[in-house]
Image (cartoon, rainbow, N blue to C red):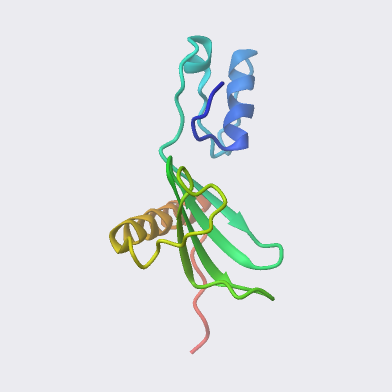
Amino acid sequence: MDTALHYQFDIAATALEMTGAAVPETWDVRSFRDAFRHGEEEGRSSLVISNCAWSCQRSVRSADYLLIRTYHSGLKNYPPLMLFNIKDDPRELCDLADREAGLTAKSLTMLDEWHAAEMARSGRTPQTPCG
């Protein structure tokens, strides 16, 4: 069983490469074909996950931690930042954001870097409000 971190499209890219098909260049994916063939576990060091159903949130998931940044809480009373050790607290009951300020800051930096990279990759420029 592979417990490494993957986006769903990483699995699609891996399947395409295993069948000899080309992975579209526009996909933001990483194929793990060779690791899969050798029965090895190889994944990403972190994932960025979004939620925009009842609230607007973006998260950084690493091996043991989940940082959740809330941009708009909708009808919920979420704090702006939450950090959970999902290995020891899989039900996300103990928010560590204040106690683990360094890890919270590191995760926010990862989120900001991901956002900047995605904006650059998109070819779009951020819009600024009218003055």
